[in-house]
Length: 109
Image (cartoon, rainbow, N blue to C red; front, top):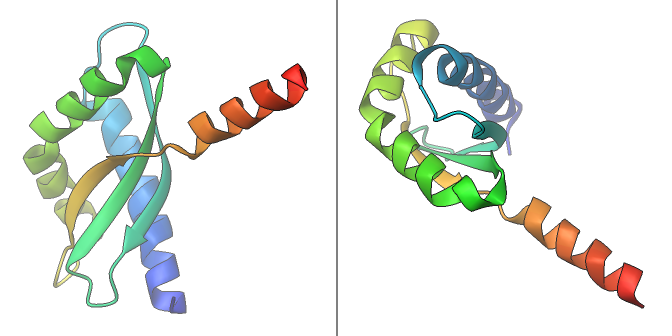
């Protein structure tokens, strides 16, 4: 991954995190965080990996993000001023769930 892509990923993560806090109303008790951003080398697509707390709110959180995707895309474009803004897609980050499962299995051993 090039340094340019790494910087863009970091910038997208920072700006989109702020946009989520200010512009997306999740129901009380649901928290969504961006854990990773992965942009393609041609800058056309960005996968946004999100974690939703509690785990029971995953479906709701992802549906809400999909519903707000066009608005978030537009606001992100206004903040970043890029010639080509990657199309975003939201993906549930399962790494935290896997870590929790491994910890649970180790405690049982």
